[in-house]
Length: 419
Ligand SMILES: NC(=O)c1ccc[n+]([C@@H]2O[C@H](COP(=O)([O-])OP(=O)(O)OC[C@H]3O[C@@H](n4cnc5c(N)ncnc54)[C@H](O)[C@@H]3O)[C@@H](O)[C@H]2O)c1
Image 1 (spheres, rainbow, N blue to C red):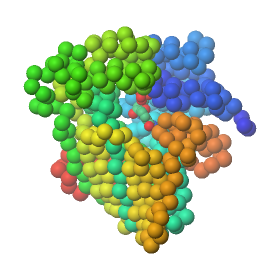
Image 2 (image 1 turned 135 degrees about the vertical axis):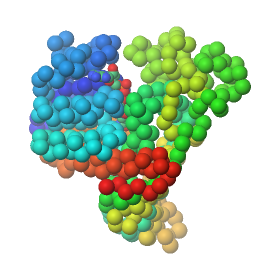
Image 3 (image 1 turned 90 degrees about the vertical axis):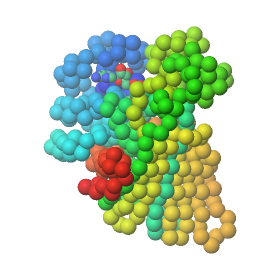
Image 4 (image 1 turned 180 degrees about the vertical axis):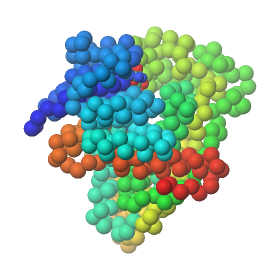
């Protein structure tokens, strides 16, 4: 590689450390070198310090001290949703190029402010829209651009949020309240809106959206349910039981990812997992949490070039993964993550052509290879080898669709102009 890019990371959790820090310091150490980290949680900081092998004076517990100086060329922001705007602004002031996790913001004003600050600084800001770097979605775009399905007419996307994932993140976990994170359509589905926006190749004109928190509330609790799964008579039968979701799933997978998260930064063992569900937030009954984000939401979109799109985010599914169809004048491209295929159907041609999604990604990294793809892409973009992919400007465009969708949902599905 031509040169090594130095990196500072703020927020050393699943994304900051797991998706960026660790691969940068190991597999991609010929491209990146992490030289400074910050996390307000002492145990998370200590864990990251050890994993990245950093000296003590490169590790910061205080955000203020960390931002007293520019500590590297690239700043990775892996803190929670509500921190992103503040930290991007501080990073730009110091002259960093920035990689900020999604979502950026749920406010139109903040989006505009960020774009102005980024333009004035002359620095680059990339957003963690990892699917834009995932081989399956890149392949679909290449096929679309090759003209194999003719002209794009409409897009149909479904995000199946596996019921256990929904209960973990959006009922019991960090993204359960839109005020503390962002509305669900941005927190989970800004990836989908970003892909739809990208494939449409035009600005979105208007959105209409409906959706609600239908199920995960007290009135739907089964008769006599306890506030905590370990004390509940439905512990062995309720599909959302923390015992079934975290403890039972460790039988075949002792390092099960969702169980690891609930004990963090402790090591995952059966004892630590039981302790977490007996005493921590992930052992709460899904009907008695303080969640308010929707568990189902549907959006209709119209783009300037006539392309239309429909998108459905749904928590009531035994499958995880995305389903996406690009409907063209001469055929369709279908991505089915559940059944692991990308299908090209051309009208008037008998046999569809199937490509296994797993055959497109050799990295095995999260988000269908997008997690590794974005690390590679960052290097290539920062060194000028490829054009910018998930730039702030482009990413804000799809955020504006999400913001308009939420405005529409709150107004009962009224059509809302995106700009
Ligand atoms: N791109 C994706 O596909 C994807 C996937 C999951 C999460 N995310 C987003 O990434 C972000 C991080 O998610 P995560 O799962 O890594 O969360 P996490 O909770 O695992 O990590 C966040 C870390 O930030 C630290 N932190 C909080 N406030 C801080 C502050 N002021 N200064 C320094 N450190 C601070 C916390 O202690 C924690 O260690 C979120 O915005 C989330 O929405 C993106």
